[in-house]
Image (cartoon, rainbow, N blue to C red; front, side):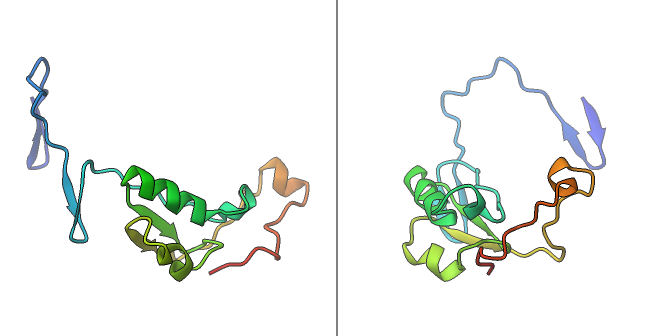
Length: 117
């Protein structure tokens, strides 16, 4: 066992996990497991429904979804169906492609026709 700061890492192998409880309470709602869908910007680049489809899937799985501040769908539209617990993630920087990627070198840019909220 090694200490990392004030926390110690204690390996637990061959222990009884038949009564393991992974429940967690987030924003006043209990969830079966501590997993959230991470924010993903500009989902409509790859699917016509974008964040709306992701919210439906998250709701069906009982998993909270974190909505990117660079979403193509407004928080009100995504949260309007109440499919999933919504959290909005705000970033101080903007989405940008690394200057060395092939797409950037070939002149690809995020289409201005995509809405941005």
